[in-house]
Image (cartoon, rainbow, N blue to C red; front, side, top):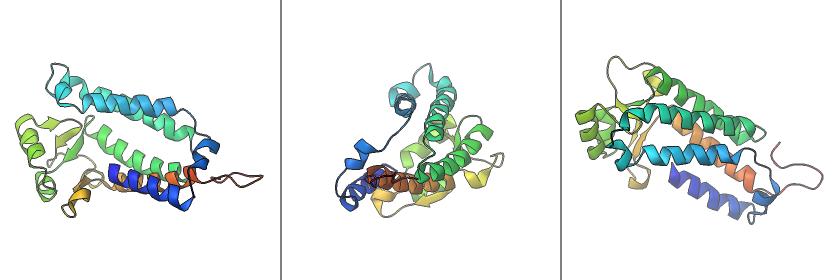
Length: 188
């Protein structure tokens, strides 16, 4: 997902001839996004994953998602955020239905070349925000079922919600970097 965001940012700056729009366009509750991402950085680290507090991962993950949800809601004046909201709600539904984890499948992870993650999921049943998918997985079509193996920089396993979020991020970045028109706004 990071590669898409970086590419969209570079293209947005090129197409919009700079990033003057970043200064002009309002964004609300940015601290919600920052705290949400910081929580995820913490719980998605090896140190935390192998600590005695690892059992708290789904709770911290849900808290981080709620903070990100608030950030998205505060910025629905951007079309990109409306798209992100749809993907977010799809992912959030799958995560809540499966006990705070996103189900992942060995066959999909194999296609993406994520062999270390496969071993960790087999050994522990869950790792970071992922849990081993099974016949008991709820809302399976919303879980990580889209595997990309090549090209390597895109490889990974994604959910439908992830793809919608990526599309929304691209739209949002273009809106956010666009200069305002005189007498109006560029994002409404």
